[in-house]
Image (tube, rainbow over all chains, first blue to last red; front, top):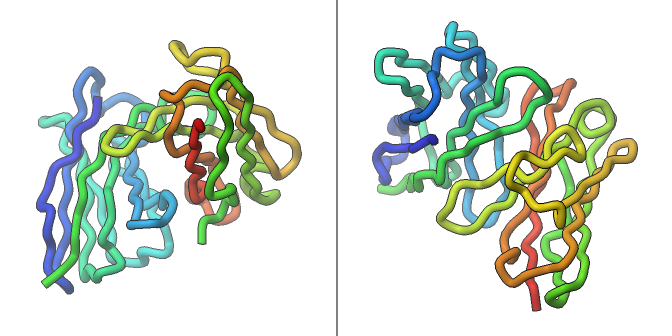
Length: 118
Length: 110
């Protein structure tokens, strides 16, 4: 089970920070941990993924604004997005890519809504 | 604009069958596996189909899927009002090196 948490409101040009708590599984398994978002009225956008070793893959559209990290002691992983604008307003989900087999997300968190506004 | 293309909405009567299409390209659906997700507002999206046509444990066989070239299709038979949700296709894109999704299809069971 995955549960997102973080501030629901972020000021423009500020930093968005979210955490995904993992339960019922160890974040130290050989699995990719992922962030996906959905802006109002739009489809799902893959933001990036992190492996327990710290290896990451990020969506190039986010350029240098995105950072992901893993906290093994707390069994959670995090997303940081800097220089946010209204375009970053979205429902943010975390998810797991199960070890082995093809790429897919299972399970997902229910998401946390982040609004960028002054 | 989503990398994968889905119809915004589909509808059908209870008990009937509906299909949802997902169109991509050779760098995603055409060369990788497709997954499908069901999403009720306020809930976590759920994996319905993986590896193009496999159902995870607990997903009824009313849900099926297929893939042909750069396109995929989700089928739902014996429609129930409880199936009303948004459905998304997803795949890894080998050229962009990112996960990609469709824009989502809202299913209405009339």
